[in-house]
Length: 524
Image (cartoon, rainbow, N blue to C red):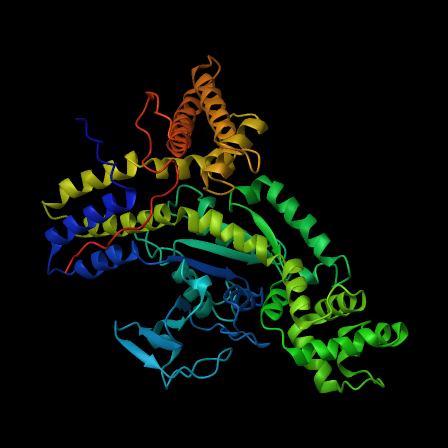
């Protein structure tokens, strides 16, 4: 009787085993806290930082993602301390101090600045806010001070939270959402700094957001369409492609307000929609006139100012238009329409497909960098074998090979045609790591069509690898793509319960998609 061969160890489990053996070598020594943190990181949600310049809309976007006004968003520079937002059973706030001590803080009201109980910002490494939210189950969001904050100290805190302290150290986060209003020299400088290897750019773990998209074109009716066009230009720009995966327009204020829209706000907007065109048009001409102008409507200046703060002028104009046209006749309908137009849904999809879908590979890479930093800092004799194992894991992991090749493709360093490059990026997970997305099979197609597409992709890159005009770097890239196609083909065959043919290289255990998380190694 034949037995099924054991499934290959996943990347996360190989890294977990390495960290566990390192704990055995350094047990009880000064390296243990770093190794314990590396082990725990493998089973934590992905850490995604929200970064950008002052008033780019970082806290507003975070509130929109969570669906709750957790982060303060007043007119001043709100985020003075790096703050982590995690999923939790209840609302709790605490501070991780630079001394290594943990300090619980009173929760206070959501959407306000936490009460630090006399602690100075210099004493705090970062704040931690726990909040029960489905959006925080797959990733921990890290809110940061502006990259061009009013003081060098604040800017330094943001940089320290996002980049390693030294070339060999791990960063505190696995991926970054970078907000920009227009591409500025400060934005380029930061994006070039946020990379795992100082000699290389790593766009794979960065998504760009054209924030405050409703303000493009001064909040005119076509503002969101204009923002779409600007973001498309950025996506096509080789300089931007080399720095981040994609650029998406998001009207953060519109999205945050849609998630928390109140019935009294809808009634106030309905009053504006029911008013004569001349009256509402006069009020909505400028933000100043809307907030302070005289009107016969039962909406005092304080009420209108509150609407302006919550919706922005574009949001008020759009809401009035939707209510007046009959598209949104209830508060719930208006909330759905504003959310749809804000760009938040495509952005959430990008976070899921591009970050959460590749979470294991990103977390494993962070844990490996932390372990490597320990091995180099404490070069005991027993660490030699561990360093060799670490190098084997790093070189042999196909997930890392895909990430490296995807980065290389986005920097334009390979001599491939535009069509070949687009196909290769999709196969490598540049548009999402789900097998159907990688293959680009038609929506709703069955296993036969998926099998045909996978076989055609495999044949294409095998031919390209063997073509006489292919240089060494192209042949190496094709070998990575061939293995990816083999993994995808194997996944299609297994799903259809068709016996797998012999392949030229060992297939991935998960069809090219990062394997699911396992248990943390016991390093105690």
